[in-house]
Image: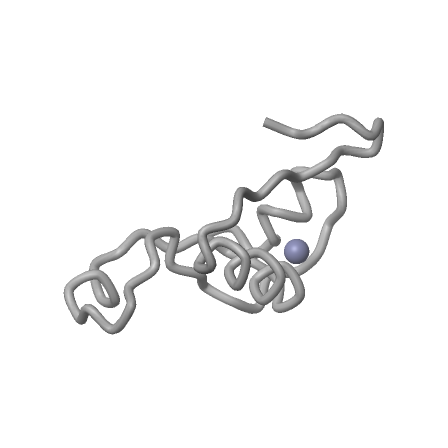
Length: 70
Ligand SMILES: [Zn+2]
């Protein structure tokens, strides 16, 4: 696993990741928790993105040129 936050890298920032995030919310499912795919995130991105994703909101990341990344 790379040690840098992948969400910060999307907007060309370099932040050391300190959180292994489950790409698929495990919601307490032990199979997903132990076998799910992880992605490295920093704490700030983890709390910002996952709270919104788990509320069912669409996540849009904007690059430095002001246009959505994706
Ligand atoms: Zn980040």
